Image (cartoon, rainbow over the protein chains, first blue to last red):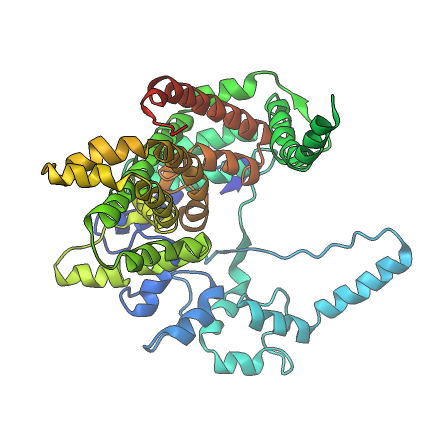
Length: 208
Length: 292
């Protein structure tokens, strides 16, 4: 999406990928153009066949759907590596005194211990943000055996990339432009190529 | 100043202090901020003069948002001023029985939080699996994907807001209609005047003082109440289709952190409403009947 600080998502491949999704909504109408909450409700009801969403929805879907539900790894274009965007976590120590810093460091180590991260994963639904938890006995081994759907996420963790963070003071506005063009494309009021190229230009102007 | 006057001013002080702190001071600060470029956390603000105002006037999104604001006002006036007025008249003057039941039933949703209402209606009005969609399905009607459709999104969001606002406006208008002299209505009934004319020529003019109050709060409060469903359900909607001037000012300040822009938009919105108020004073106040 970003190369050396300029937006480059309107490449041939970017447009082709976006077109795959947009055509499902505008051309053959095989995908539902609906908000996130309502979409998940419709999937749980059994009215929608497939959902591509965050792993955090797993317990909601697993517990509430009355049919046999399963999760699979992300499909990928032929010849390309799987890349899944994921949010990150950050713990920072802002203490100024040395003994406070030492104490904060002890606490941080505890928070990142295998047991703590396992509890965190069970509570939030997200994948554990460190190695060694998914297979550990005191970690998630038992949990993953009982909740098979979670494996789809944990097994793809090596293909994770960070969400694009547009640099500079106008980063949030750049993100807003991407959301706007998404709605314009999915509404059918602009073609994928036109929309993406125009937005890329506008974002690059903002990033200067 | 004699002691009485000093006492009066002292009694006014608490209300005045709250007004100063929560209305006048933020307003003055907004005017000040609208001339700066600031992201709300940086320790320095950059002075840009009128650039924020120029940016807003040149931005096509501002016009879409402004048009939406007027569409919202129109729909809100229909749902929360005109229809409650008619309901109040019908239930007070035309109906004979079950008046108390209607009054309670219509007012009840007003006590429920709009956040809860928005979440409820997102499910109730789910175009694929919600109860309304299922019932419409029996008649072979497919619901539009209203969260992603221009036009429908404004109507449905107004419906959700009016679920709460209708009750309060209805009760206020009902009290006003109730205050119209029964003898006038009886006399008109004896003369075989149709109900429609009784409403337009007798009840409406005589209750117009309250009617004007409800008109103004429908617009002002309505636009403020609208913020909740917009924030929860569409966050400004498919490409600003459900955004209005008030929501967009929030969006600029607290989502994009462009405080100067947001302040400038707020001031411009205020000017537009000021003009609307002037128009109201000029053209509407004459027809209003104030009992004293």
